[in-house]
Length: 77
Image 1 (cartoon, one colour):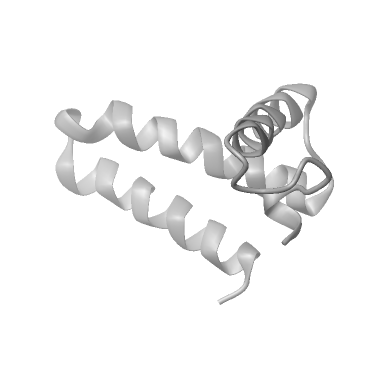
Image 2 (image 1 turned 180 degrees about the vertical axis):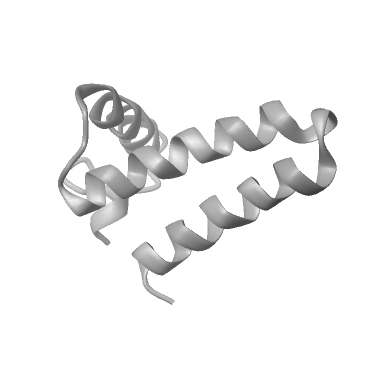
């Protein structure tokens, strides 16, 4: 499964969880959907500044934790 397929599956899964699990799951699912829709926008090249900021923050964190190198982007691996 490539990154775009993975992102689409996650968005669909969390959207379905909102439908299936109701109020108890809404906030968690919305948070996940926000992340994955921003990532999808960045990957597809049509990101807003907010999308870029969110993904950059995740990338900076992974770099600071030395999970990826300082010259890498996690979504380009």
